[in-house]
Amino acid sequence: MNPYNDTLETVPESISIAALDARYRDGSLTPARLVEAIAARTTAEDSHHAWIRALTRDEMMRYVDALQGKDIDTLPLYGIPFAIKDNIDLAGIPTTAACPAYAYTPEQSAAVVGRLIAAGAIPIGKTNLDQFATGLSGQRSPHGACRNALDPRYASGGSSSGSAVAVALGLATFSLGTDTAGSGRVPAAFHGLIGLKPTKGVLSTLGVVPACKSLDCVSIFARSADDAQQVFDVARGVADGDPYAREWQPSKPPHESSGGPRSARSLDGVRFGVPRADQREFYGDISYSAAFDTALGRLRSAGAQLVEIDFEPFLATARLLYEGPWVAERLAAVRPFVAEQPDALHPVIREIIGGAARWSAADAFAAFDQLAVLRMQADKVWGEIDVMITPTSATTATVAELEADPIRVNSRFGYYTNFVNLLDLSALAVPAGVCADGRHAGLPFGVTFVGRAHQDAALLDLARAWLGESGRGHGNPQAVHAVHPGQNTATGVEADSPKHAR
Image 1 (tube, helix red, strand yellow):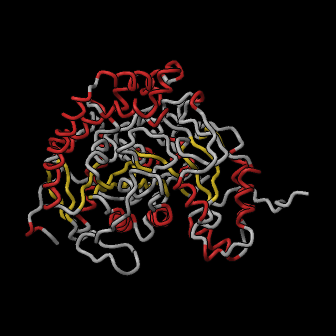
Image 2 (cartoon, one colour):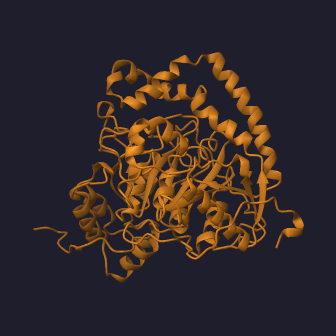
């Protein structure tokens, strides 16, 4: 006899934390019924190549069983389904980092996964990624190029590709990714999702296969700022044995006390730093250029101050990540395996990691000195602005374009992302409607709010003001639309003086 015979034909249209909580409480849904519906979809054909290892129905039901007799009021993520990038450990399930020869089966989950499960969340599978989390495209996997959930001709973004796809397809309420160079932000932008790149160390990386251990962050994908906030509140915390962990030290949002309940807040008077027009890059993509102008126009209309900043220190920092010795940190993370089985690596990953051997210890120390100078230069901007806004990616590309030129096209996605972790900043990718013009018309466009370390909650508050009370994006392949339709395109941006502030 099947104890879970109260099956649900389809996954509910809304699987936000609030929506599922309401249905669990009124008895119209149970975690078992939800898992049955999810299992029916994850075991079907995976045309998007989102999964490396979807959990079976029975494996998911073990987590459902663990909820029996538990008080929903004591579990903030009771019955909430989530996906896990396959460089993050889930007990009893192989971790591969998209390299089958590297696979191992952990006895315990990563610290952050353990915290989420303890809060009632249900893991549903391990997702596809750019191998060893090296890339921003989602194409560098032996399990196949991860296809965009909204248009499978296009890149999903990477390296946390499958994690974004799982949320965009409505299979997971949220998912975990990792972010070293933009891997938790670019896939969010390509799917109209929220992508939180937290302050380094506040979400433990214990139990995560490292890319650059000193820079890695566990990231969160969700459809709304509220969901991302709830997951962040549960997931953060110092784990014993994590040498890079640190306590979160929240700071006050710009111009506003952080006390009291979180809610949508005004953008009026917030000083947004914008790269100078001559320092912006879209690689000829008029769709993205026009969409960013539209986003800036929205900010102006909302009363925000747009302050042009010198973006060069941030760009110079970004170049260090792949043009400097931090590539050698990627080699250090997997050096014994690479030495023993170099042919097990994806060809593009082998080319990138293999090139790290040219950097010497002297080069590394020189780069640290250079980074210190750039950090000092970049820090000056925070006296003039409250938050920075950039496009999340400079452009997008089709799978075919990436296959034809995998390194150069991939690198374009990181123009506005690669500096963030090196400078110890927090960042939040947020939807900004869809492209209205050019060859990418109809595809999502996203911007990123960048703040100083520990400003994660402040950025989420800004997302609520930007998107509405719940800070909700779309991420729905059945209903792609502009988040705020009917906006006029702004042309350019000038530095606002105090007399222009509203």
